[in-house]
Length: 401
Ligand SMILES: O=C(COP(=O)(O)O)[C@H](O)[C@H](O)COP(=O)(O)O
Ligand SMILES: [Mg+2]
Image 1 (tube, protein in one colour):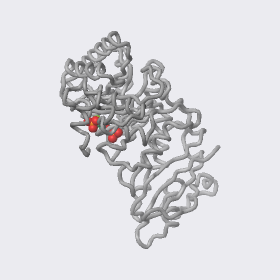
Image 2: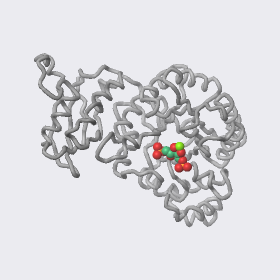
Image 3: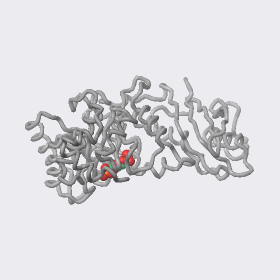
């Protein structure tokens, strides 16, 4: 069996050599501990972690640690995470350590991956190569089901391909799924009959571990055409549970609320890359990875690599649609596509519902910005005879989000 290889950045505390630190990580995560133990029998050593070449990187070092495939319980994602990303973060003689990437050998990926992937989602929506435009209903919480559905209608008629709940909206009393979902789907059916366009609605089924599958099944019965999961707070395995259930068979939109507590610090934590790989193997069809122009901080090179991790061939597993979200508006669309390419979902909440002429115009302006980018026409030129785009640029053209 092939080994798994995890790459870390680390910075030892003063007086600690990089060799000591790397060995401490490899031992803590495999067969060792802080001191010699008489119980570490000879036959156990085939599970030892192997420390690769240590190279200087920024204020610290980078190292690849090889974990023997036999150390993993195949298919047990919590256990995988405890190996790659467990106790090591707390070792007091290491000032900072960040898991950058993991090479997963095919042998430890017993999962089927996305059912739809980019191709499958494009087929549902009826597109070939342009980026999709999505919206998050705003305000995040508070609207009743009827108004939520009305906003969804306006956005869909205006041109979005995808509507989604926000991460904190689940099944609260003010907007229960049992009322919200049928109301939104009815409006999307209306849009279909009026325009022929199929618009997806990612209803947020995030909930407790013992309830999420039931919630997904109920959503399917109520007519859902996409489901949304907050992957970090629900746990990675929640994606697998829903993706593998034969009765569901719906594309999965994966939000990553809370990720920045783990991913943002360049010296400590876990980069987005391993999360991209996990979501892809576990069956997410679209995943938030960050923006070029938006409101959340990102390292551009990491973001470009993360999106490639979702879209490039990998172990024969379908691709995942990367989602740019957070502070997106029509003025940033060209830059997003220039840097990240067109296999992309551009998702705007404030950047659609905050349009001076309302949600419908906001959605149209986003689509016009995408069209301008695809036709390689400068936004300002395109805006001259596209009123919705012009109005959006007047409001946000010079805004730094
Ligand atoms: O609510 C929003 C966006 O709202 P708005 O468009 O109004 O900023 C999303 O939760 C963030 O985009 C998170 O996305 P990411 O995980 O990609 O940072
Ligand atoms: Mg949100």
